[in-house]
Structure formats: structure tokens, C-alpha cells
Length: 367
Image (cartoon, rainbow, N blue to C red; front, side, top):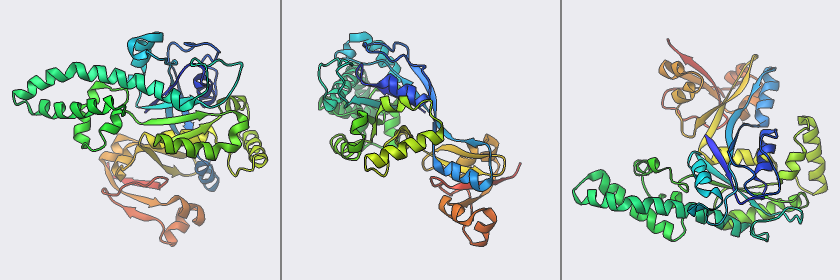
């Protein structure tokens, strides 16, 4: 899964990407179109549960779930018509599976804003308008061809014409394609996948705040979630970039002190944003843990036990017999597999079992 980081110039996209990837691969500077070719980074989905399991299993080797982020150059008004290298940048967005839109909430007189003022909702609307205009132009060009085929009785063309008409009507009312398709079946949605429509992807919003605003993070998150009706994460990209060189313990201590000073139980961090992104793209993970390794295995939501086994090795899915499964909370409370079995917390599950997020699993197979 690839998540594209988009937004207007100078909203903090490359700074966020640098903090996400714990590197300086992206060139963060105060001028538009700083990023021309997209930067790509693979990011760990840090989860304290893995560390707890490793502690119980006395594991030295921890392997987290991962997700791929792509830093795409800043878009501007008119991008759908080619402004600011818009066509090139829009093509990069087509290649990602979800969109993380960064919008600027912070004030800083030293960092110019391409629109001349700070207005996060306006900025979101500018980006989405350009993406929707591009989708609308693409679909309108194809509609006549399918309409002609539909008149001849072509069943797929009839269905596609129906779907495209609904989507075009929605786009003209400034609805994202993914929202226009809410009432269609999974099979119908697949018919549009080949178009790689820009707004037929999950959207996540990262509201980039100043460090002084972190104390207001819960209120800001609630405000934007209510307005956008989509997943929203609060992040201070500059603050996160300053912690790149911190060790895990230093970071934890610093965040704890800051939370205490801001009267917050929890300071929003990149780990929170990454977790939101992971969930939004329809992924989850289960754990395996033993003396040599504790690991999170990434699978799509609603995966069966054999499909989960296939994440380890394709042969495991093919030769799957059954799985021993225990919930994370029970495993931690019991302290190990043996105690979990004694208490009846370890269950034997078969091929039809739907894996739950954070299950701990041990597979049995026959080859």
C-alpha cells in the first residue's frame, strides 16, 4: 500500500515526510515546487503492543508492520489544467492507494503561503477541486463511447454508463468519486478501477499545527473531523522533525514532559497519524511471538485464517489446517501460551475464521 502526501506548497509536506521516514531524503525549503520527483519511504507502524509481547517472549528481534509514504510535489490552483507542472504531479497521485492531504494550520511569517493567508479548509478545497476537475474531464471524455456501446446492448457498457453518470453528477456537485460510489457493489466499483481516478481513493487529513497549538489538539481534531467527515490526524511536522535524532526513550520522556506541561494525557504524534493511515487503507495486523522473533503481519481487514497464514508464506495458506489463536489482552494477562491454554483462552480456529486485529496466532499446516 502506498499513501501519497499531497497539499499546497509550503504546508509542511516534505518536513512531514522527513519526520515520517526519519531521514532527510526530501528537500524541505521555502519555495514552491521544491519536490519535483516524488520521494518514497517505508515507515514502521510503531505499536507498543509489539514491545510488550517481546518483553513476555524475551525476544530481541522486533518486526513492525510497515506502510509506504510518497512525498508528492505541491499542487496549486489550475493544476488540472497543467499549472505548476500539475499534469506531472497528478500522474504521481494516480499511482498511490490513498491520499494523505496536509493542510497548514500554523502561522509563520518566515514561511510564505501560496494563497497569501492561512485557511486550512480553503486549502483542502483547492486541492480537492483540482483532483475532481481532473476526474471529471477524464470521465466526460469516455462517457459518449460507453453510451454508444450501451445502446447496442453491451451489458458491461450499460453498467459502466450508469456508474459514470452517477459519478459525473456527483463530481459536478463537488463530491469525491469514492463518496459517489458508496451505494454501489464491490463488483461495480471494480469496473472503475482501471481509470485510476484521483478521488476514488481513501482520504486522510493531516492538520499541521504549531507546537504552541498542541495543547489544543483534541479540539482542533474534533473541529476538522466534523467538517470533513473523514479521518483526521493532528501533527506538528516541525516539532516531529526536531525529534528525528532522539532515541526512543528520549522521545518518550520529552513527549511525557510536554504532555504534562500542556495538561494533556497524550500528545498527538506521527505514530497516531501512521495508525490512522494504516486503518484507513483497510489494513490490520496480527502477531506472532516466540523466543527468536515478535512480528506484526500485515493483512487486509476481514482476512480468513488461511489468508493470514499466506502473509507468512504462500504454502502456509495452501496447506493450512487450523490455527491456535489468543487475543492480545488475554496473552498479556496470562503471560504465555501454556497459561492461556490452561485458562481456555487459546482457541483452535479453522479455515472460515475471520482474523481480528491484534490476534496472536500459531498456524498448523500439512505439506
